Length: 439
Image (cartoon, rainbow, N blue to C red; front, side, top):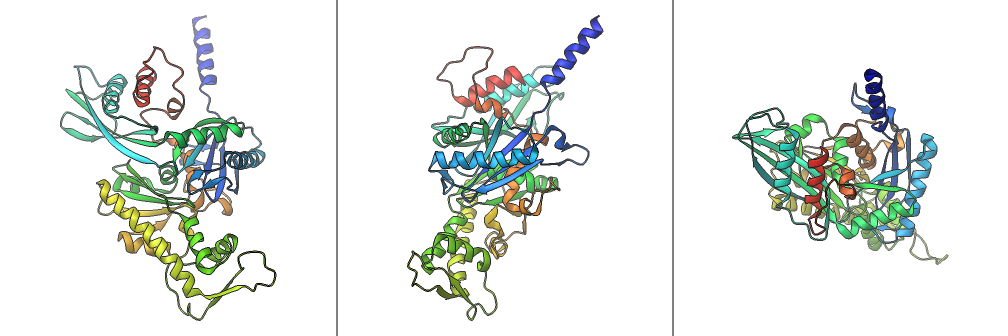
């Protein structure tokens, strides 16, 4: 009888804990992509994933990484999710949105607590995390990632999991990634208007890095630069952990705007020229090679704009170089420790422009490669490039981690608690209380 009751409880726990369908929406300035993964899409043997539904549509209502028209953006989200659902033959309830907009920023905080004579437990970890986050004051910002960078026990640092160890003092260093609260609320409203449950936000450079980086790159040090349409962002890894996030509000759309202005052509014409003939480095015979662009406006008598390809390169190269230099200078100013041998991994749609790799190599003076979703090997060619790393990274994070100090669902909703909390308490501290009760 007791054994049957125990089996019944175990069966109920297994049913309640059964993994659900995971859906990621990459809401960018150029496209809106949706990746859907079923519970059986995770292969733990070789740590690969299968995306059962993949779709992308042209982005609408998004400019420079920010939503400027909620109705248009929510319609694009709904359309992308519906197409991915049709391919996967499942219904999606909620989605995680990945974005590089909203003024992403990262801040590191540290905490220390005294230990007793017993082995270090989850409760000790929670106390150390609460100690670190008590120092953090967020004004009009929302925490979206709370990640342990490293633990220490007494004089020993660089510990990844201190549980079951012994010592007198436990220390932790956290990286807290935040987004502007107004931008967070707009994203939530956009998803809800698409009749979906908002399950949180993931920083695009972080999840792109999870999809594109190898394990040894994270351990030895790497910088993943995600080049989107509205912004260029970076995630810095060292010792296997994310240590910094940086964002520059300049992306591929700014290059297109420069071309449209420089050649007096339309936006669509500039985008087409950039894709077919654009390059950020010089090439042979570019002074003699001529390109044609459609005229701006609707005058039927106006002829095409004809210009040498060297003029196009002279428009693109300065913008790409400036973007890379601004990002490099901001990383230096942040004081983040970038390992001497750390390489650069480029992701995002704008990274596919010819010559971008060479410019990054010259500006950062580090080895550079183009990143792709390495853990989703069965993607079609149209969805397997650098532009889809962010959406694939959300699936990677859901399947394999890394473990965050506070789960993303707890950061979205603090409504379920075991004890009353002061409404004036900082949201991150409230998240720590949830961690203490539920870890």
